[in-house]
Image (cartoon, rainbow, N blue to C red; front, side, top):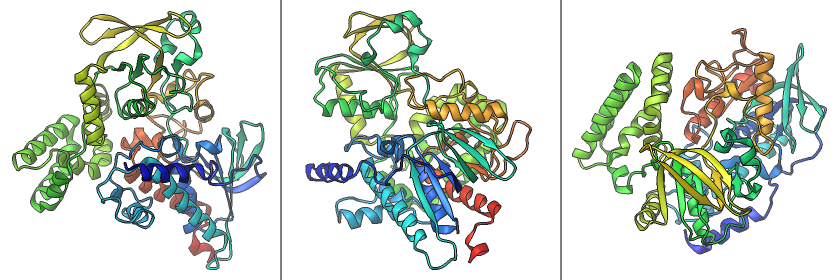
Length: 523
């Protein structure tokens, strides 16, 4: 990225650490409460304000600095999106809108298939949400004007009354709402040292262990030649490597994960253009993905391998085969039996993840160069134990995939393991240092009250097709919708903008209809 653009991104993000003017105080009541300030929360608010005659709406986020979420709010100015710009529009019916925004802000600087800085996408979201909320508050098309408020407090409990919900905030305040959008995301997995000997871990200097890769202090005060261990080798770990090197770190970096695999690269620009221009190949891939993928995970993977090989033989990139399955992934997941899903999770998920959630080619190539040079080591294994060596060092005992034991001395260990995989263990997984403690508390309360329930694999909350929670008594929870990662158990693909924007549109329309606040009812 050109230096001038880096400076522009920095200036845009430094102009306001609180782009939505968050308040410390909360209203006594609102028509709809949106819990969570990431993409799903912000776009739920935008949909409600721009498309429905809502009287008042409050968005709750624990910290104004956390608005935009981890993906676009906690990143640095160099970290890139993992989806091309032309597919990242915030509204499903306008997928190229983000690219059009880029063209207005930075004419001719980016191609449609470019992977641009995530911070720029954050600024696009700010503009999109501001436009929706401001136009709604001054709308002359309906008799009801929308009042919006952003509250810097976390919702830690939700209880139902006869015709409304009571939201208990971390500050102790209580807010009444007629309807609720839950968009908190899946809490982060517990760091590996939580399973280690408690006394040994307690003796380790707190700054040596970073439970949250996205915390502001995770990479602070690391000596340039110090050894760093990243627990995980996915997209988050790759971002941490990139950030470390930009900070001048030149020491050894271990990327430790169970399988020791990096994400695979996106297709080259040429390959992507060739694949999408081949109508016959695209039609064949669509048929394979739609029909074969529903039968079983084994059939789906076999069909994808055959399609990828056919593309390679034709001179195209294999990535088009995976991309062709995207429109059918949800239908396939929902068609599979519980045993099929369990098989996928235990046997195929790691391979699917590296093929499906790919990284920019240049980032992978830079890490592979360092692996060849020995400054980065990709290690397949798990943490068995850890102990303090000094105030500055920790010794990790690692069980490698090759059935060997290895000890690594590191100055910093950073948890990059991603979201937790079993929501049924939400109560057991809370820790004082966990930045997701508030969302864990909220989810635990919903499950404890029976207002929500998890699927049999524990992957997410059970919901209907519109995101309405299914209670422990197998009834639908009225006037509540769930969007985002918490739908993982129902749809599996619930992390990327192309899927999330459809969820948001469906959930907000459904909730507005239930509350009878759609524009047609109040125009």
